[in-house]
Image (cartoon, rainbow, N blue to C red):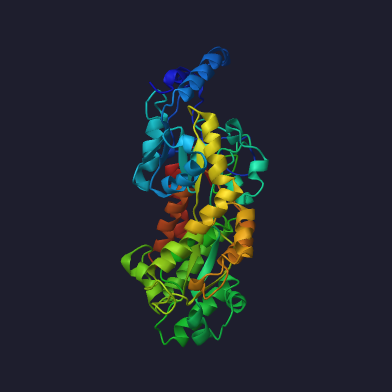
Length: 472
């Protein structure tokens, strides 16, 4: 049997998984909705936990020495492919890693939540991957452990972009619960040839001046529509602006005292989408649809809000070519856009029942901290890695000059944007609340509701989803 002698300790000593409240108060907690929370267990008296501590540690050591499988869970093959860089550096780990690809991000949390209820199960996760949208559900709970418990030090974190650390920090006590091997700052990725023919713009700096604020962005959208004879729109989907707005809130949806707040940036988001819809300034596609994916290969769409991975695996993948002169390959540039933002990312954390914390630390240190490994990984995969030194060395060596972008250095563009990402607004309620808001934004932009009604209905939906939150 794998490591599971420690299940007695976990079943009795692990406190209930409670989502931390949002905001800067690290000592606060707030209860999650039933459908968004991991399993809960009763908290045992401190004396009982202490009595079990020594034998539990011995059991963990015994199982690690026995070569038991070390289970790592995610929802696709990306992390599995990146782990190859870990096992190349540490071949002794290869036979022990048991990578479990759940295969569907939509059911991933449900699967993990079920597993975390059974610390005595053979396939209990030793490490789990998190996405930004729900990472705080797990890091602000007792189902994950600080990376320092796995041997990660401050020196290991020195080259990381600060926002990637903030996101994975347990807001209850300030402990860091996860590490990411990637950084995902966003930019506005646009057609340089259309910018010149329609706007007279010949550089990213000139383009930035045309879209530096949302008022400027909308004015430029109108100009593109007019100058193209109604053939080109600045965006494909109204929803393409959402990540920029969500990354520029000034306060969390739910503060540390359990009170819901609607940031003024969210009202601006509603108004911008309303203008885009009413003035016919986008192609009104649905994000990720076939029509939306076809946009980069045509002249119908001027640009996209996209991040590091989006540049390579969405825009380039759908441009209609694989070399300069084919499709729109080589006819793109990047600039910041109305505001800095980020989009996505994957973090890796160890669970409370991790059978081998030293192995967990070795994996995290190699994948997320080792500059040499991360430099190689970035050069070979085009991942924008979460290591400033690695990205600078690649840019200095000319590795960022990208023929897809007409020679523009994508690393040099993304690096300052990654530094500027602010995630102080994040909280454990983000994923669900954002979905509730978008339902009302769509209704408002389509003229089905006025703004006041849409906001009132949004707040009512939040109150229904989270009875423990005060919605004013």
